[in-house]
Length: 464
Ligand code: NAD
Image (cartoon, rainbow, N blue to C red; front, side, top):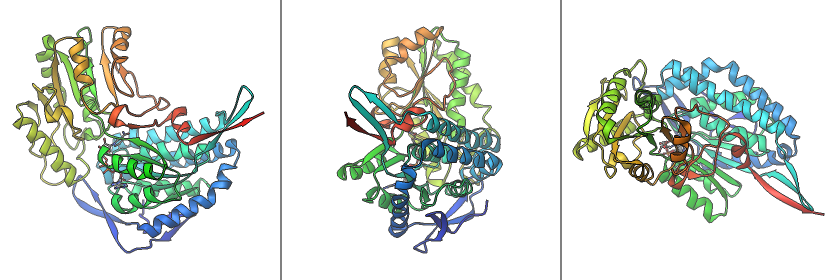
């Protein structure tokens, strides 16, 4: 797509208030291939004012009409599927097939789900002598990361629109083009002016201004736990609602009765997918001591299939590459055993990282505690189920996880004891309608499906 040099505010592309720009770099070859404007306080203020002005009209639009606009948006996105995939492939470095199947198709599906949910949701209920209205929270400030750039946008904007909220989006610096493509799609779908607004820019400038703006009623943020804590503090001081989708360090627990080869192969694929840049990735594999060596051999063989440039892309930027490499070096220094990959980049040009597997990882090691956000898997041994549970729950995070066992009931019994927001049982498929969000420091609130819609609603009770 052709980049815009302005901001999408009040239904049109307007010149940015300042002159600073952000380079958009292809992580596969380090080439700058576009620039977008870096928004200032003035851009954010104009966007929030437009969103506030549009709020009464959109909140007062019948849910069926809001649903029709979201369905139109879904159709526009579906019509631009290839362009979405090419854009994400260029700015994130995702292999094209993965960009089509996930970065394009998932948000199209999620947009469609909110067209249906908006049409069918009970925005009014009767409780005893009260009528309870579920009303939009107001103006939403949405701040998104680069790892699933369009999905994260749609997972916030679609439910907000379904609820009757209006939105100002500040997308990640590394992936602004697919956000511009989204704004074009909103325009093409015929949403009223001001209902959706886009300000590209730096987190500490445009993002910070959006969080602090008194005209924003709810901040929905996806990104790192460190930034999430700052945002929660700023929003809390103003008694603003906040939804946070943060980091993770999820456990893939393989119980002794499981199909080991399947559990290990799916586990490795889960971590390597999107070059390990998935907040819900199962980056710790937990295997019973008696089957440990077999699991490590299977994982090393599985990792060999992820050839950089074919099934796995680069990481998003130089900083991320240095960060992941630093963790790999730290894993070696702390005594973990490298069985695949390592700190050397597999290619000189671009932000490449070798798919890496560590064995002999103990629960206290840095690589077993901190989110790496790259293609790095740690395999840990446990002695018995209680030990496995202690290890699985032994981080500050609680976003996702997996349990494998001989039958689902055994896996479910273990999953019930895990401190985490979602668990895949024996390879259960991702469900775009199931609530997605974290326990502990992985976040506050839920996205997707009806629970995601509820985040953007507040109740008003009328007594009769
Ligand atoms: P990040 O926190 O640095 O940035 C995320 C977004 O916040 C970007 O748009 C950025 O510009 C903005 N931002 C940065 N500083 C800000 C500030 N002071 N005020 C307001 N906005 C600010 O994270 P990232 O590097 O873009 O993404 C990687 C992290 O995101 C990982 O830790 C990952 O686990 C997490 N993540 C979580 C989920 C989830 O659903 N839980 C999903 C994707 C990514």
